[in-house]
Image (tube, rainbow, N blue to C red; front, side, top):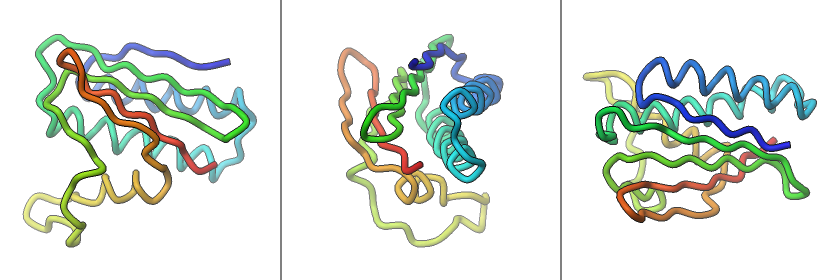
Length: 131
Protein backbone atom coordinates (compact mmCIF):
# COMPACT_ATOMS: atom_id res chain seq x y z
CA UNK A 1 0.00 0.00 0.00
CA UNK A 2 1.60 3.33 -1.01
CA UNK A 3 2.12 6.10 1.50
CA UNK A 4 1.19 9.61 0.35
CA UNK A 5 1.80 12.70 2.43
CA UNK A 6 1.42 16.42 1.92
CA UNK A 7 3.95 18.38 3.97
CA UNK A 8 4.71 22.01 4.69
CA UNK A 9 7.82 23.20 2.81
CA UNK A 10 9.66 23.76 6.10
CA UNK A 11 11.78 22.09 8.77
CA UNK A 12 8.63 20.74 10.40
CA UNK A 13 7.74 19.12 7.09
CA UNK A 14 11.08 17.30 7.13
CA UNK A 15 10.31 15.80 10.55
CA UNK A 16 6.91 14.63 9.31
CA UNK A 17 8.46 13.17 6.14
CA UNK A 18 10.97 11.11 8.13
CA UNK A 19 8.20 9.84 10.44
CA UNK A 20 6.15 8.84 7.40
CA UNK A 21 9.17 7.09 5.84
CA UNK A 22 9.81 5.12 9.05
CA UNK A 23 6.15 4.09 9.27
CA UNK A 24 6.20 3.02 5.60
CA UNK A 25 9.39 1.00 6.16
CA UNK A 26 7.83 -0.77 9.16
CA UNK A 27 4.68 -1.52 7.14
CA UNK A 28 6.87 -3.04 4.41
CA UNK A 29 8.97 -5.03 6.87
CA UNK A 30 12.24 -3.37 5.84
CA UNK A 31 15.28 -4.16 7.93
CA UNK A 32 17.12 -1.47 9.90
CA UNK A 33 19.68 -0.75 7.17
CA UNK A 34 17.06 -0.36 4.43
CA UNK A 35 14.93 1.81 6.74
CA UNK A 36 17.87 4.07 7.55
CA UNK A 37 18.82 4.43 3.88
CA UNK A 38 15.26 5.33 2.91
CA UNK A 39 15.10 7.92 5.70
CA UNK A 40 18.44 9.46 4.71
CA UNK A 41 17.32 9.73 1.06
CA UNK A 42 14.04 11.37 2.13
CA UNK A 43 15.73 13.74 4.57
CA UNK A 44 18.56 14.78 2.26
CA UNK A 45 16.35 15.35 -0.77
CA UNK A 46 13.69 17.33 1.07
CA UNK A 47 16.31 19.27 3.08
CA UNK A 48 17.83 20.42 -0.19
CA UNK A 49 14.41 21.46 -1.48
CA UNK A 50 13.61 23.44 1.68
CA UNK A 51 17.08 25.01 2.09
CA UNK A 52 18.07 25.66 -1.52
CA UNK A 53 15.04 25.20 -3.77
CA UNK A 54 13.16 28.33 -2.81
CA UNK A 55 9.72 26.73 -2.62
CA UNK A 56 6.87 29.20 -2.95
CA UNK A 57 5.66 30.53 0.42
CA UNK A 58 2.87 28.40 1.80
CA UNK A 59 3.45 25.68 -0.78
CA UNK A 60 3.39 21.98 0.02
CA UNK A 61 5.89 19.19 -0.53
CA UNK A 62 4.30 15.98 -1.73
CA UNK A 63 5.86 12.58 -1.07
CA UNK A 64 4.70 9.17 -2.24
CA UNK A 65 6.47 6.00 -1.12
CA UNK A 66 5.66 2.60 -2.57
CA UNK A 67 7.04 -0.87 -2.84
CA UNK A 68 6.70 -2.91 -6.01
CA UNK A 69 8.42 -5.83 -7.69
CA UNK A 70 11.38 -3.56 -8.51
CA UNK A 71 11.94 -2.43 -4.93
CA UNK A 72 11.16 0.94 -3.38
CA UNK A 73 10.05 4.02 -5.26
CA UNK A 74 9.93 7.52 -3.81
CA UNK A 75 8.22 10.34 -5.70
CA UNK A 76 8.60 13.95 -4.57
CA UNK A 77 7.00 17.12 -5.91
CA UNK A 78 7.64 20.69 -4.83
CA UNK A 79 7.01 24.26 -5.98
CA UNK A 80 10.66 25.31 -5.86
CA UNK A 81 13.04 26.39 -8.60
CA UNK A 82 13.57 23.87 -11.40
CA UNK A 83 16.37 21.52 -10.38
CA UNK A 84 17.25 18.39 -12.31
CA UNK A 85 19.65 16.39 -10.10
CA UNK A 86 20.90 14.47 -13.14
CA UNK A 87 22.64 17.62 -14.37
CA UNK A 88 24.74 18.90 -11.50
CA UNK A 89 28.47 19.44 -11.18
CA UNK A 90 30.66 16.66 -9.83
CA UNK A 91 30.94 16.53 -6.05
CA UNK A 92 34.12 18.18 -4.82
CA UNK A 93 33.78 17.43 -1.13
CA UNK A 94 31.78 18.98 1.68
CA UNK A 95 31.47 22.72 2.04
CA UNK A 96 33.64 23.44 5.07
CA UNK A 97 32.51 27.08 5.24
CA UNK A 98 28.84 26.37 5.92
CA UNK A 99 28.86 22.61 6.49
CA UNK A 100 27.07 20.02 4.46
CA UNK A 101 27.29 19.62 0.73
CA UNK A 102 27.16 15.83 0.64
CA UNK A 103 23.37 15.37 0.66
CA UNK A 104 22.89 14.98 -3.07
CA UNK A 105 25.76 12.49 -3.18
CA UNK A 106 24.07 10.39 -0.49
CA UNK A 107 20.85 10.44 -2.49
CA UNK A 108 22.76 9.33 -5.60
CA UNK A 109 24.59 6.61 -3.66
CA UNK A 110 21.42 4.99 -2.31
CA UNK A 111 18.92 5.75 -5.06
CA UNK A 112 18.70 5.83 -8.83
CA UNK A 113 17.00 8.75 -10.50
CA UNK A 114 14.18 7.15 -12.47
CA UNK A 115 12.57 10.35 -13.72
CA UNK A 116 12.64 14.12 -13.35
CA UNK A 117 10.27 16.72 -14.78
CA UNK A 118 9.44 20.36 -14.19
CA UNK A 119 5.90 21.20 -15.23
CA UNK A 120 3.40 23.85 -14.22
CA UNK A 121 5.78 25.32 -11.65
CA UNK A 122 6.55 22.06 -9.85
CA UNK A 123 9.51 19.71 -9.73
CA UNK A 124 8.68 16.00 -9.86
CA UNK A 125 11.45 13.57 -8.97
CA UNK A 126 11.10 9.78 -8.96
CA UNK A 127 13.79 7.78 -7.18
CA UNK A 128 14.37 4.04 -7.04
CA UNK A 129 15.76 3.51 -3.55
CA UNK A 130 18.16 0.66 -2.93
CA UNK A 131 16.67 -1.45 -0.10
